[in-house]
Image (cartoon, rainbow, N blue to C red):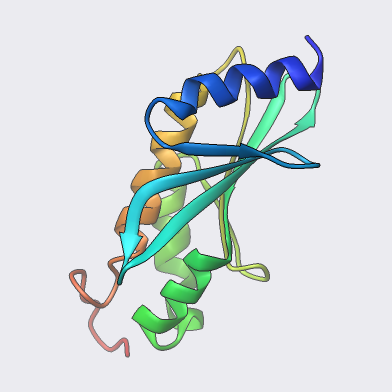
Length: 134
């Protein structure tokens, strides 16, 4: 299956539940997840044949920086939550991502795993309080 065919299939799958737009490297997925009025978007790209990656965009780390006051204090908690859902946390990029083979996990399973982690981590400090954290 060609890259274009795969992205077209992904576009059709996501377009019924959220807004999608193709770009030069993959697919932007605008979700119905909002933090303080700002919409969350994910990026989907093929990283290897039959292997896809969905990751958060800049709006996620901007929200996280605002919500937690100091993201660096929460790296371990973010990693713990992410690990439970099979999601990776990149401390340098402040990015959550899930990389998966198409025949091992469906696109919707990967998307909802990532969305769950975003929902949990995005509520650190506002609804999920940690002792001795800012």
